[in-house]
Image 1: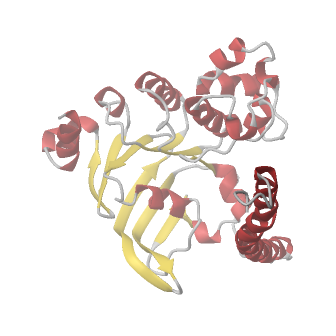
Image 2: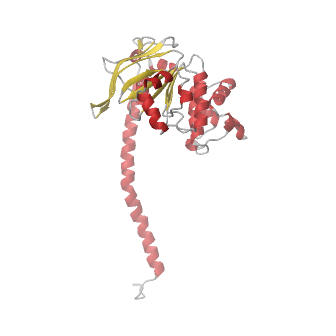
Image 3: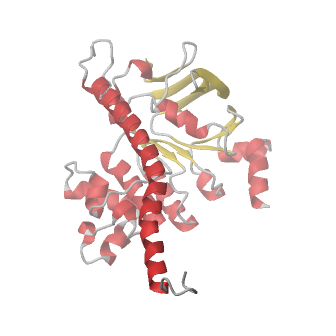
Length: 314
């Protein structure tokens, strides 16, 4: 048509643009329909959860633990993740552990050995079967009121979510703490340099999901959130994975130096100088605890920990 002179290049360009205004929205419509269906399903799930939370429940059969006094016990713990209404492959097999108050434990092993699952069960994210139990001070955690349980235990995980707010808010999460408590968490988590490097201090804006700070600094915020609440039991699930060796050592030394704190630290960083400071190293392999004891004793045994350390060194 252009060659025949019945239309112009400008008209063709205009037609193409107008067609795009129709085609592109139509192609996007399918994606948005899927998003709409997913959103409706999420809203239904959320409404069910809120209904369950707000439903009055009988707490007379639940225990309220106000303090942690003795130990945590894992007794014959076997666990499989549910898959489409049935149990999948067994993840944990016959776990028997005693975690004593005030002691620090390093939980090590290859990826997929069940370390994270063990912490999730202690947080009661999943229910155990009848023949397995986890207890705190001889009280089965299934019978402990959830808010009471979370007053005793705090977990620092690999995944970090940072709110589009100030550094101070991201540590306190809107709860009231004294200036002394906030400074304690900042100093212990290694955030002091970040605070002092910004003119706004703890009021500095960290951006949506922490886009204004580094991955390591986001990890320190998560650790500060846990430290400021001073729960007697602290779980760290690869919490220093985004930190370099120097900062990892500094933070783990902080955890190790807090008296009366009971800590279970999952780590892949097999630093001998750090592992020697733990009261015990627990080695997991294929869902089972294969070794437990001081770093020196396990190295002398030349078992799984020795082999993994040798592999890492090479």
